[in-house]
Length: 93
Image 1 (tube, helix red, strand yellow):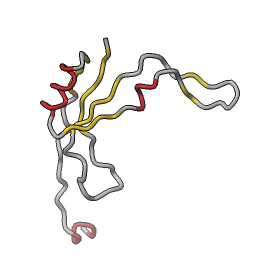
Image 2: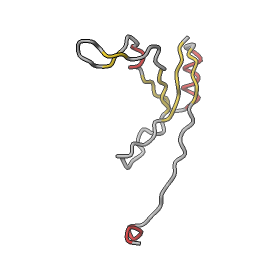
Image 3: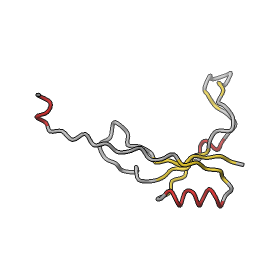
Image 4: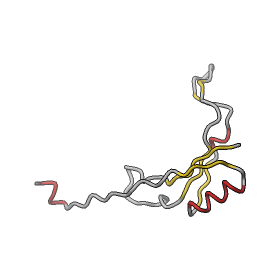
């Protein structure tokens, strides 16, 4: 049986907009640990499901997809959005 996690991607610290942060993402959890390749030294594994990232408009849609395909999924709640309201004049207090 497959295991996955469902979460909302938080806003990147380097961006000001919130584009794409309202979608829910389903990612499969890795089956095996990554190990360094003896020739190149790059980390990798035989688990190709780590390359699959599915996006859904709602958490219910993501859960129903997981149920239909026999995937055990746990939901990670979205982080609370905190607004730091300040004015330009606050920089000089």
